[in-house]
Length: 146
Image (tube, rainbow, N blue to C red; front, side, top):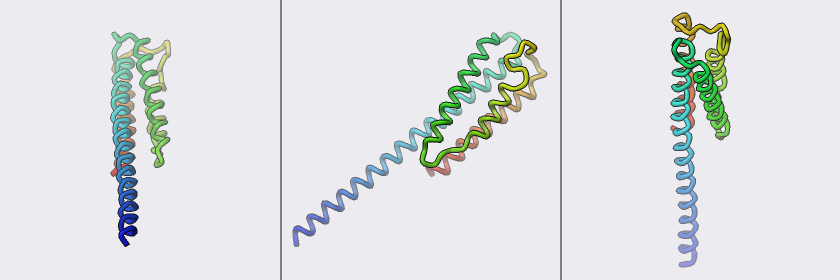
């Protein structure tokens, strides 16, 4: 009889360890993706600033801002692809493509670009698209991890 209690205790302990390990893995995944959401938001902020400098500031160094824009877009694309690897993939493509189009459309990398207030509407559109992408990422995170 003592053997049965001992065996039951060992099995219960193993199940407890497996459950604890599972909970720790979920917490680790949640922390990693929270970090990715925050990193995406930071990168999007840099993209908006670089875009505003490019389209509005005649004193900005255009080639530098183009490089900053391309770097931010590539970083966002890389982060968004990581969201697709989760068991509950995030669909951020629609918002990302809208942001990408607003940033790189119009006179982007054109010889005709004359930075100034005529692009304030475009910069407003870029900010709105950035907020939509951020909101969608936060919505996915809350739905997935809370």
